[in-house]
Length: 335
Image 1 (tube, one colour):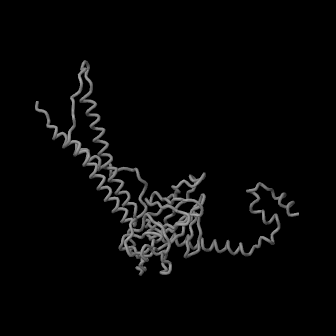
Image 2: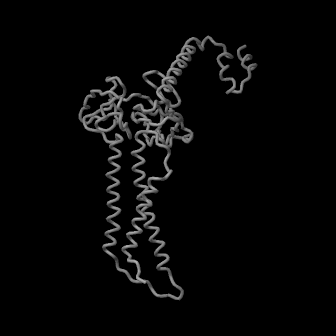
Image 3: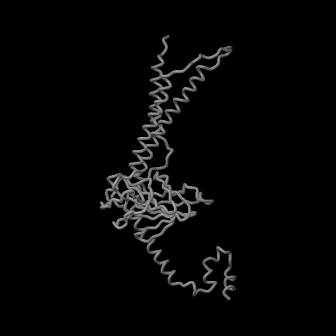
């Protein structure tokens, strides 16, 4: 019986490995749900790398298994194996292929990084808010920016002086001059995130944003370095004391997603978590209005009550439970 040529077997095996690795690379469940316009870019790059990794794994492990079976030691065979000095074509092949793969992945990664706003376009400067007077003037970096925003208005942004650095990097060169729909100031501290909405004066312990809006986060830190990460957005940016940074994105899916600090910042680093709530524009406006009213009422109450005019028991009453003090004890302290 005539043996099947090795070249044909290699071709069939190569086709099988290629199809299987591509299918697995596109049909896995390793990543969380995509919830931002930037997520597909990151996932596309990950899927390519995962497909290549599967192919390399199958080729390497498959070769090992074939050699283990075909060239195993037979009973009674104490001879040495075939002496091989080397194989130049084979060595060139297994050196050239990984080199080409690494080169292509490098070019692809730079393209993704650029499309996410990681490389700024010359002659552009990012603006902080809808007002032209809030043009960024301070140094810093950003890792991501919006891909597209049909609703954003164009803004004439001045060209920074030579050598000047700006707070953050916008989108692609065509979108660098656009102003974000929503700007939120984010402050990291041990061990919490504080979100301030400068246009409305609302402060919150969780981030609320409308779906489809071009959002810009101005990040800062009060004590040590923190890192703001939303896995579903595929975005992460450091919050550094004294160096403002930015993160810009468009949320595409309503829901509640975790905000995680990914920079070791102290003993309770693991509990430094919050959440971003992506809502419809109507729900977001309703939340904003409710918080504006509630915080205004709290401010009025704080102004109306003067601590100096309160008795000891009245001043300590809100903290009695936390301190483990009974009402009788408070009354005795006031006398």
